[in-house]
Length: 125
Image (cartoon, rainbow, N blue to C red; front, side, top):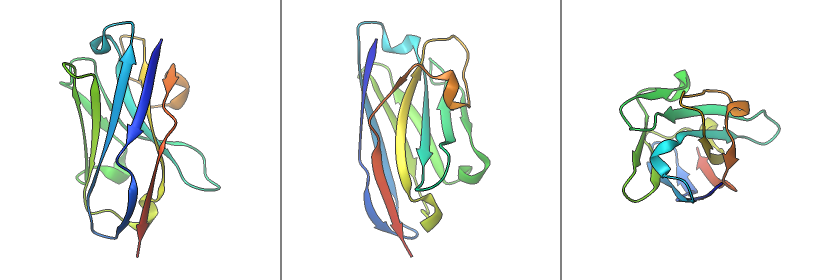
């Protein structure tokens, strides 16, 4: 079991940057989870944003965030981050952190076992 709490969302103008954080509390070693970020805009399906493997050495991104977003993790402090640069109005969504027990990384939401409550990101034009 792992509890995930996201923070760092807010209202920004297009072109600005935000860093989302996800704090994990787990009875199991945090580094045993592969982690992901997803987002859901109003009226749209949840979509994959980024994923990182247990050691942090491999990161995967959705095409629409490549070059703008950077995902990282700090296994010492049980944290996951999503650095978002050059934000666009279409990045407006609730962003969710998720944890996966399996040893492989997943890019679909169904592959994740635990979810945070989400943090709202709103980008104005």
